[in-house]
Image (tube, rainbow, N blue to C red):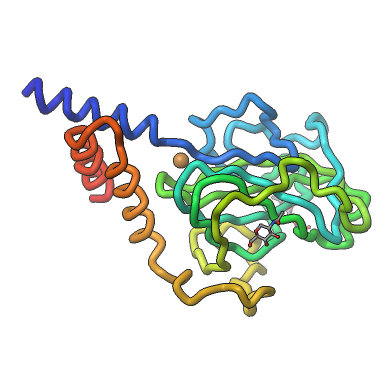
Length: 232
Ligand SMILES: *[C@@H]1O[C@H](CO)[C@@H](O)[C@H](O)[C@H]1NC(C)=O
Ligand SMILES: *[C@@H]1O[C@H](CO)[C@@H](O)[C@H](O)[C@H]1NC(C)=O
Ligand SMILES: [Cu+2]
């Protein structure tokens, strides 16, 4: 039994090192530089504690401002949402249509808008990431201000990735009941292939990661077996 156990242990070790989630770079995350990835699966803000009476807020322009993220997975779906609720307990509004990022690394959307009625109010911006290991969360406290941002900030960059609007029911469910999937894409760059099954592509990403493992085919096989077990 020992060889099997150590094989499984190697697989687990491999899976945990491959378990890079995501970072919210802009606006500054509630957790700052001390993000606890282990807590990132906790709704609504991962390890961040939303409380507008205590959180440090940065300005967010309602006519267009930046949300910048760093994705550690080869593929994931994004929801950018916000609420005026002091503890982020509910009443989330979608700020940007749900989309899928393909390719690890930086993504910044510099023209995210918020309702004009929110000018002068404080709120919480929430980013939810539908990743192969579940939905992950980060938040930022902001002051909604008038106008559009003219300075995207140094973290507002795109890596070599592609983004396509997509309909992702698990994320759409995280915004207020009045929310609906976007009836039309604001950009025509969306490709029909974006509609490919999310769970299928998630499994494929894991297999690609396992296949490129430097640990060797045994550990990779153990990882795949574990993934298979997890999917049952
Ligand atoms: C959501 O907004 C409604 C209407 O303003 C309010 O009555 C309700 O208490 C809010 N719920 C939360 C969780 O903030
Ligand atoms: C990054 O890519 C997205 C999707 O193509 C695009 O909408 C956005 O404007 C780009 N961001 C920057 C900073 O160029
Ligand atoms: Cu992850």
